[in-house]
Amino acid sequence: MNQENNLPIGLFDSGVGGLTVLSAMMRRMPNEQYVFLGDTARLPYGSKSSKTIVRYAVQAADLLLSQQIKMLVIACNTATAAALPVLQKNCPHIPVIGVIRPGARAACSASQNGRIGVIATASTIASGAYREAILELRPEAEVIGIPCPLFVPLAEEGWLDGPIAEAVAARYLEPLKSLHPDTLLLGCTHYPLLIRAIRTAVAPEMHIVDSAATTAEAAYARLEASSLLRNTAGRGHVRYFTTDDPAQFIRTGNLFLGTSIRKEDVSHVDL
Ligand code: DGL
Image 1 (tube, rainbow, N blue to C red):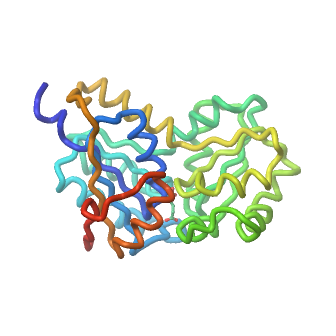
Image 2 (cartoon, rainbow, N blue to C red):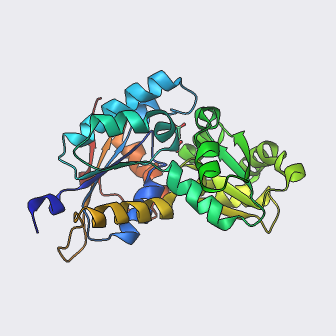
Protein backbone atom coordinates (compact mmCIF):
# COMPACT_ATOMS: atom_id res chain seq x y z
CA MET A 1 0.00 0.00 0.00
CA ASN A 2 1.43 3.40 -0.86
CA GLN A 3 1.03 6.39 1.43
CA GLU A 4 -1.68 7.99 -0.67
CA ASN A 5 -4.19 5.43 0.63
CA ASN A 6 -3.86 6.90 4.11
CA LEU A 7 -4.73 10.43 3.04
CA PRO A 8 -8.17 11.74 4.04
CA ILE A 9 -11.22 12.23 1.84
CA GLY A 10 -12.30 15.89 1.71
CA LEU A 11 -15.95 16.95 1.69
CA PHE A 12 -17.57 20.36 1.77
CA ASP A 13 -21.01 21.90 1.97
CA SER A 14 -22.34 25.40 2.49
CA GLY A 15 -23.28 24.36 6.03
CA VAL A 16 -23.96 21.22 7.99
CA GLY A 17 -26.23 19.58 5.38
CA GLY A 18 -23.27 17.76 3.83
CA LEU A 19 -22.89 15.84 7.08
CA THR A 20 -25.73 13.61 5.79
CA VAL A 21 -23.29 12.59 3.02
CA LEU A 22 -20.37 12.26 5.44
CA SER A 23 -22.52 10.03 7.63
CA ALA A 24 -23.33 7.71 4.70
CA MET A 25 -19.64 7.65 3.71
CA MET A 26 -18.58 6.77 7.25
CA ARG A 27 -21.07 3.90 7.23
CA ARG A 28 -19.79 2.64 3.85
CA MET A 29 -16.08 3.25 4.59
CA PRO A 30 -15.68 3.31 8.38
CA ASN A 31 -11.89 3.10 8.37
CA GLU A 32 -11.28 6.10 6.09
CA GLN A 33 -10.06 9.47 7.38
CA TYR A 34 -12.20 12.51 6.53
CA VAL A 35 -11.88 16.28 6.48
CA PHE A 36 -15.20 18.14 6.34
CA LEU A 37 -15.64 21.85 5.68
CA GLY A 38 -18.94 23.60 6.39
CA ASP A 39 -18.93 27.13 4.96
CA THR A 40 -21.50 28.20 7.56
CA ALA A 41 -20.54 31.90 7.44
CA ARG A 42 -21.69 32.18 3.83
CA LEU A 43 -24.71 29.86 3.88
CA PRO A 44 -27.06 29.73 2.04
CA TYR A 45 -25.41 29.13 -1.31
CA GLY A 46 -28.75 28.25 -2.90
CA SER A 47 -30.01 31.80 -3.30
CA LYS A 48 -26.76 33.17 -4.75
CA SER A 49 -25.67 33.62 -8.36
CA SER A 50 -23.74 30.78 -9.96
CA LYS A 51 -20.69 33.06 -10.31
CA THR A 52 -20.63 33.56 -6.53
CA ILE A 53 -21.25 29.85 -5.83
CA VAL A 54 -18.34 28.89 -8.11
CA ARG A 55 -16.05 31.36 -6.29
CA TYR A 56 -17.07 29.95 -2.88
CA ALA A 57 -16.69 26.35 -4.10
CA VAL A 58 -13.18 27.01 -5.45
CA GLN A 59 -12.14 28.53 -2.11
CA ALA A 60 -13.66 25.61 -0.18
CA ALA A 61 -11.89 23.09 -2.43
CA ASP A 62 -8.57 24.97 -2.04
CA LEU A 63 -8.81 24.71 1.75
CA LEU A 64 -9.42 20.96 1.50
CA LEU A 65 -6.62 20.50 -1.03
CA SER A 66 -4.25 22.19 1.44
CA GLN A 67 -5.07 19.26 3.79
CA GLN A 68 -3.59 16.74 1.33
CA ILE A 69 -6.77 14.87 0.42
CA LYS A 70 -6.96 11.87 -1.91
CA MET A 71 -10.51 12.59 -3.13
CA LEU A 72 -12.87 15.57 -3.13
CA VAL A 73 -16.60 15.05 -2.56
CA ILE A 74 -18.81 18.08 -3.17
CA ALA A 75 -21.41 17.27 -0.50
CA CYS A 76 -23.67 20.09 -1.69
CA ASN A 77 -26.07 19.90 -4.62
CA THR A 78 -25.94 23.66 -5.21
CA ALA A 79 -22.13 23.66 -5.45
CA THR A 80 -22.16 20.49 -7.56
CA ALA A 81 -24.63 22.02 -10.04
CA ALA A 82 -22.61 25.23 -10.36
CA ALA A 83 -19.01 24.15 -9.93
CA LEU A 84 -18.37 20.43 -10.60
CA PRO A 85 -16.60 20.92 -13.97
CA VAL A 86 -14.52 23.83 -12.61
CA LEU A 87 -13.40 21.82 -9.58
CA GLN A 88 -12.62 18.76 -11.72
CA LYS A 89 -10.45 20.99 -13.91
CA ASN A 90 -8.77 22.62 -10.89
CA CYS A 91 -7.97 19.26 -9.23
CA PRO A 92 -6.81 17.01 -12.09
CA HIS A 93 -4.67 14.86 -9.76
CA ILE A 94 -7.52 13.53 -7.57
CA PRO A 95 -11.04 12.18 -8.20
CA VAL A 96 -13.70 14.88 -7.71
CA ILE A 97 -17.30 13.73 -7.38
CA GLY A 98 -20.56 15.54 -6.77
CA VAL A 99 -23.95 14.48 -5.43
CA ILE A 100 -26.16 15.11 -8.47
CA ARG A 101 -25.41 12.06 -10.61
CA PRO A 102 -25.65 9.71 -7.61
CA GLY A 103 -28.94 11.40 -6.59
CA ALA A 104 -30.34 11.04 -10.10
CA ARG A 105 -29.34 7.37 -10.07
CA ALA A 106 -31.16 6.80 -6.76
CA ALA A 107 -34.32 8.47 -8.10
CA CYS A 108 -34.27 6.62 -11.42
CA SER A 109 -33.96 3.25 -9.77
CA ALA A 110 -36.73 4.00 -7.23
CA SER A 111 -39.29 5.28 -9.74
CA GLN A 112 -41.66 2.94 -11.50
CA ASN A 113 -43.83 5.42 -13.42
CA GLY A 114 -40.88 7.66 -14.47
CA ARG A 115 -42.46 10.76 -12.91
CA ILE A 116 -39.90 12.17 -10.51
CA GLY A 117 -40.28 15.21 -8.27
CA VAL A 118 -37.04 17.01 -7.40
CA ILE A 119 -36.91 19.47 -4.52
CA ALA A 120 -33.78 21.55 -4.10
CA THR A 121 -32.47 25.09 -3.67
CA ALA A 122 -33.53 27.77 -6.15
CA SER A 123 -30.10 27.71 -7.76
CA THR A 124 -30.01 23.90 -8.21
CA ILE A 125 -33.50 23.85 -9.76
CA ALA A 126 -32.67 26.79 -12.05
CA SER A 127 -29.47 25.07 -13.24
CA GLY A 128 -31.48 22.16 -14.68
CA ALA A 129 -28.66 19.84 -13.53
CA TYR A 130 -31.01 17.25 -12.03
CA ARG A 131 -33.33 17.21 -15.03
CA GLU A 132 -30.31 16.64 -17.29
CA ALA A 133 -28.83 13.88 -15.10
CA ILE A 134 -32.19 12.08 -14.79
CA LEU A 135 -32.97 12.31 -18.51
CA GLU A 136 -29.54 10.93 -19.31
CA LEU A 137 -30.41 7.80 -17.32
CA ARG A 138 -34.12 7.64 -18.23
CA PRO A 139 -34.87 9.68 -21.37
CA GLU A 140 -38.62 9.06 -21.03
CA ALA A 141 -38.78 10.43 -17.46
CA GLU A 142 -40.87 13.43 -16.50
CA VAL A 143 -39.10 15.68 -14.01
CA ILE A 144 -40.97 18.15 -11.80
CA GLY A 145 -38.59 20.57 -10.07
CA ILE A 146 -39.67 22.64 -7.05
CA PRO A 147 -37.37 25.11 -5.26
CA CYS A 148 -37.85 25.02 -1.45
CA PRO A 149 -35.59 27.80 -0.13
CA LEU A 150 -37.04 27.90 3.41
CA PHE A 151 -36.07 24.30 4.11
CA VAL A 152 -32.37 25.16 4.59
CA PRO A 153 -32.83 27.74 7.37
CA LEU A 154 -35.39 25.44 9.03
CA ALA A 155 -32.87 22.59 9.04
CA GLU A 156 -29.98 24.78 10.22
CA GLU A 157 -32.24 26.07 13.02
CA GLY A 158 -33.12 22.51 14.04
CA TRP A 159 -36.85 23.02 13.37
CA LEU A 160 -37.12 19.63 11.76
CA ASP A 161 -40.75 18.75 12.37
CA GLY A 162 -43.87 20.12 14.05
CA PRO A 163 -46.46 22.58 12.74
CA ILE A 164 -44.10 25.16 11.20
CA ALA A 165 -41.97 22.68 9.24
CA GLU A 166 -45.13 20.81 8.17
CA ALA A 167 -46.88 24.00 7.01
CA VAL A 168 -43.85 25.02 4.93
CA ALA A 169 -43.62 21.52 3.43
CA ALA A 170 -47.35 21.45 2.63
CA ARG A 171 -47.13 24.81 0.84
CA TYR A 172 -44.08 23.88 -1.25
CA LEU A 173 -45.21 20.36 -2.11
CA GLU A 174 -48.81 21.20 -3.02
CA PRO A 175 -48.10 21.06 -6.82
CA LEU A 176 -47.06 17.40 -6.53
CA LYS A 177 -50.67 16.43 -5.75
CA SER A 178 -51.86 17.00 -9.31
CA LEU A 179 -48.71 15.71 -11.04
CA HIS A 180 -48.57 12.31 -9.32
CA PRO A 181 -44.85 11.55 -9.23
CA ASP A 182 -44.12 8.24 -7.49
CA THR A 183 -40.66 9.37 -6.35
CA LEU A 184 -39.45 12.50 -4.61
CA LEU A 185 -35.74 13.25 -4.73
CA LEU A 186 -34.33 15.37 -1.92
CA GLY A 187 -31.92 17.37 -4.06
CA CYS A 188 -30.34 19.29 -1.21
CA THR A 189 -28.17 17.71 1.46
CA HIS A 190 -30.07 19.60 4.16
CA TYR A 191 -33.46 18.11 3.32
CA PRO A 192 -33.07 14.54 4.68
CA LEU A 193 -33.31 16.05 8.15
CA LEU A 194 -36.81 17.33 7.35
CA ILE A 195 -38.00 13.93 6.17
CA ARG A 196 -40.79 13.66 8.77
CA ALA A 197 -42.30 17.02 7.79
CA ILE A 198 -41.89 16.24 4.08
CA ARG A 199 -43.52 12.83 4.54
CA THR A 200 -46.67 14.48 5.99
CA ALA A 201 -47.07 16.57 2.81
CA VAL A 202 -46.90 13.82 0.16
CA ALA A 203 -48.82 10.68 -0.74
CA PRO A 204 -48.06 7.87 1.71
CA GLU A 205 -46.78 5.57 -1.05
CA MET A 206 -44.24 8.14 -2.38
CA HIS A 207 -40.65 6.88 -2.56
CA ILE A 208 -38.44 9.53 -0.96
CA VAL A 209 -34.76 9.25 -1.90
CA ASP A 210 -31.62 11.33 -1.43
CA SER A 211 -28.09 11.22 -2.74
CA ALA A 212 -26.19 10.32 0.45
CA ALA A 213 -26.03 6.51 0.10
CA THR A 214 -25.49 6.52 -3.67
CA THR A 215 -22.75 9.17 -3.33
CA ALA A 216 -21.01 7.02 -0.72
CA GLU A 217 -21.27 4.07 -3.13
CA ALA A 218 -19.88 6.16 -6.02
CA ALA A 219 -16.99 7.35 -3.83
CA TYR A 220 -16.22 3.78 -2.78
CA ALA A 221 -16.22 2.61 -6.41
CA ARG A 222 -13.90 5.43 -7.52
CA LEU A 223 -11.43 4.80 -4.70
CA GLU A 224 -11.48 1.08 -5.34
CA ALA A 225 -10.94 1.57 -9.09
CA SER A 226 -7.94 3.81 -8.35
CA SER A 227 -6.59 1.43 -5.64
CA LEU A 228 -6.93 4.27 -3.15
CA LEU A 229 -9.04 2.61 -0.45
CA ARG A 230 -7.47 2.73 2.98
CA ASN A 231 -6.83 -0.79 4.08
CA THR A 232 -5.59 -0.07 7.56
CA ALA A 233 -7.88 -1.72 10.11
CA GLY A 234 -9.69 0.31 12.80
CA ARG A 235 -11.98 3.31 12.75
CA GLY A 236 -11.15 6.41 10.81
CA HIS A 237 -11.24 9.92 12.13
CA VAL A 238 -12.94 13.16 11.04
CA ARG A 239 -11.55 16.68 11.26
CA TYR A 240 -13.99 19.54 10.78
CA PHE A 241 -13.54 23.10 9.61
CA THR A 242 -16.23 25.75 9.84
CA THR A 243 -16.13 29.35 8.64
CA ASP A 244 -18.38 30.53 11.48
CA ASP A 245 -18.84 29.73 15.17
CA PRO A 246 -17.58 26.19 16.02
CA ALA A 247 -20.05 25.87 18.94
CA GLN A 248 -23.01 26.49 16.60
CA PHE A 249 -21.51 24.07 14.04
CA ILE A 250 -21.30 21.37 16.72
CA ARG A 251 -24.86 22.00 17.97
CA THR A 252 -26.50 21.68 14.56
CA GLY A 253 -23.94 19.24 13.22
CA ASN A 254 -24.81 16.70 15.91
CA LEU A 255 -28.39 16.65 14.64
CA PHE A 256 -27.25 15.90 11.11
CA LEU A 257 -24.57 13.40 11.95
CA GLY A 258 -26.45 11.55 14.65
CA THR A 259 -23.29 11.29 16.78
CA SER A 260 -21.38 13.77 18.90
CA ILE A 261 -18.82 15.98 17.21
CA ARG A 262 -15.92 16.54 19.60
CA LYS A 263 -14.90 20.14 20.26
CA GLU A 264 -11.22 19.38 19.71
CA ASP A 265 -11.95 18.09 16.19
CA VAL A 266 -13.48 21.39 14.99
CA SER A 267 -11.41 24.39 13.83
CA HIS A 268 -12.52 27.78 12.65
CA VAL A 269 -11.13 28.89 9.29
CA ASP A 270 -11.52 32.02 7.17
CA LEU A 271 -11.68 31.38 3.43
N1 DGL B 1 -26.90 21.81 1.27
C1 DGL B 1 -26.87 22.56 0.05
C2 DGL B 1 -27.29 21.69 -1.14
O1 DGL B 1 -27.20 20.48 -1.09
C3 DGL B 1 -27.65 23.82 -0.01
C4 DGL B 1 -27.79 24.71 1.13
C5 DGL B 1 -27.62 26.16 0.76
O2 DGL B 1 -28.50 26.78 0.14
O3 DGL B 1 -26.57 26.67 1.09
O4 DGL B 1 -27.71 22.22 -2.14
